[in-house]
Length: 379
Image 1 (spheres, rainbow, N blue to C red):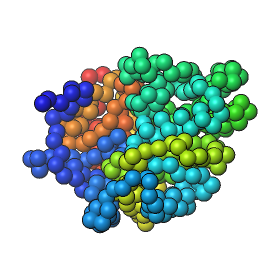
Image 2 (spheres, one colour; image 1 turned 120 degrees about the horizontal axis):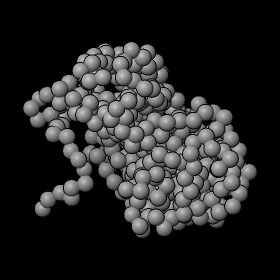
Image 3 (cartoon, one colour; image 1 turned 135 degrees about the vertical axis):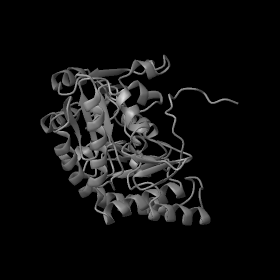
Image 4 (cartoon, rainbow, N blue to C red; image 1 turned 180 degrees about the vertical axis):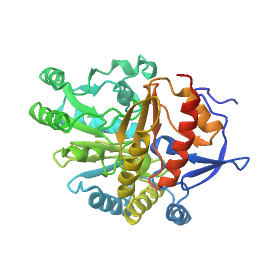
């Protein structure tokens, strides 16, 4: 049987990894500045992470949500303290797309409306409503396109209000820093204005923190810089450091009832063990502070780059926008310098999403390689 060929693949085969490094079958060491789409938060194969999962699987790896699981309660309590979202309720699932799917569904249950408002260049997942709220027609099948979604440009509160006035929009879903779209973000004034409009027109505000959450921006969540209170917060990626886990945090204004949401694998014992270890390491190693410090260092170093149009993002969710497509540059970085980086919908943006454990010396290696390649590009 062959694989269903939907991924363009680089000719690299990782077989092991440690902290910020990945090793292929030939023993070649790669510096990981992409973390597998911002998934690796506390570093590859962190000893506390490995120990937590190993110890748990020896005892109990899985049982359904039909029974008591005290680990979910422990996780909810620890997450409340570290995220400072103390009044929220936790529902666990298994991926970012599933998190956004449940967030949108719950919003519709809550206010009885059926339309979604999303933003241009957004990416929220590849499942039913989540992919319909993703601004990329190439990944939206006709079946998904039946969803009623309005797309608005970032910063355009006037367009938002015009749509919400129709009283059909169940949710506004937004990435406070866009991921796949290319690291665009707006102002505190915009996000606070968006929250105000959602309250005024009885529309749920969903903060998609799938990529930006769990300390990646220097705050636990990206929205916290703007001092807003979303109705629902979706989480995944860095939450499990590679273990498939996701969830939503739900404001107490939204009430639970039996059967409202459900999941088979969500919140299983291994997922809880993985996430609890991530939270422990983020706190013990001051990784949010490190994300901010390394971000400042990165931005200062980037100012000296030739052909650079702009520096985008915040914390360790960063982008370098050039005046040319970066696909060949990424290949050079991988094959000639053994450095993983990412691309974006904006083809001129190089995305940098390393483990939060990264140090200045790693960034120095990246900039040395990047300058060498940029200087060889024809003007």
